[in-house]
Every structure is written in C-alpha cells, then in structure tokens.
Image 1 (cartoon, rainbow, N blue to C red):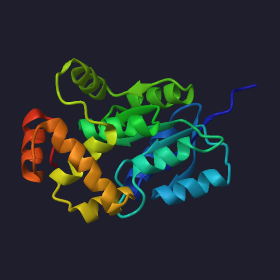
Image 2 (image 1 turned 180 degrees about the horizontal axis):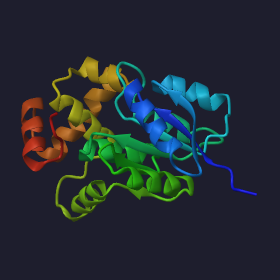
Image 3 (image 1 turned 180 degrees about the vertical axis):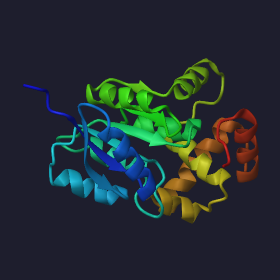
Image 4 (image 1 turned 30 degrees about the vertical axis):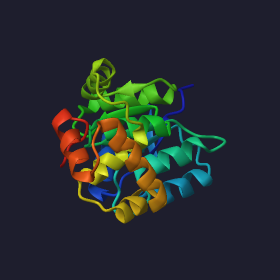
Length: 213
C-alpha cells in the first residue's frame, strides 16, 4: 500500500503561476494540488471546508485582497492549521520577518529550482522550517548585524512607507487602524533615530532594511 500524496493548497492571485505550479507538482510522486485560491479570503474558505490540506503554498502580495501575511496569521489561528510555506518574489527583511512572525513554517522564492521547492514542501509538511538559501543568509546576516531591532510589523509598515503609501493606505493594506499605524511609526522613528518619514525611509534604504521594487 502506497502512502497518500501530500495535499497542497495553492494561494496566488496569478492564474498562470498557479497553473505552472500545479503542472510541476503533478509531475512529482507523492504530491497533489487539491485546491487553489486567488486571495486570502478564498484560501480560508477552502480550509473551512476541510479538504485535508497538508501544506499551504502562500503568495505574499495578492492584489487588493487579504495579503499573505494576514492570511498566514489567520490560518495559524485555526484549530486545525496546516503548515504555511510562503512562496514569493520578495526577500526583504520586512517581508521575511513579517511572514515568520505570522507563523509561516518556511519561506521560498519563486525563482527556486523545482527540486528545491518540492523538497521545501515536503519539509514544511513535516512541520520543519524550510528556507531558501538567500533567505537563510539574510536572516543570519540580520542576527549578526547591529541594525535596530524592528518588529516584523514595523518592518512591514516601513516597507509600505518606502513604497510611498500614506498612513490611510497602510492601514487599509494591513487591516489595522490609522491610529495603530501612527503608533508604529513613532516606534520606528525612535529606533532609527529619526524624526520624520523621509529620514526613516532614507535610513532604511541605506542600511538595507527595506528595498523599493
């Protein structure tokens, strides 16, 4: 009797990406894509139906819907939560730490070789950490670096700030109040030793804390 295949939920707002991943996993023994979702809300609906998902492969930024970090946090709060493996093109400190703090089991990049990604899925299914080599290096560099200790949420807000978003836009993006955004900004300014948004962005870019795409 053969072992049951790993059951994968793909969460990505690009149909072409989902199609490519589904085709790749179809060629792998012991893996099966059982459901797809174009945004966080749809992913939670899939899990509510309890299809027996073993691993969720999660994109981080998905159009105007619930982002991957928020969705990951919601999934990990479920009574029966499958491991979440982030699969994204973004490798900034802000994105990585926000995902890890939200409960992601692993973090892979979309340019990873297929065999590396498949190995990461198997590792995540076992509840073990799976990191792309570049991501692991960034985390180690951060541990060694004397950079200010910003929380995952603060890094996330700083990244959105660097992209030019207003406080109101940031609050909508992260599903938090403007007052909460302002509180986080006060803490960010204090930790970076600056007193305004422009200086915070300049300092963050110079130190490699965030990156503007």
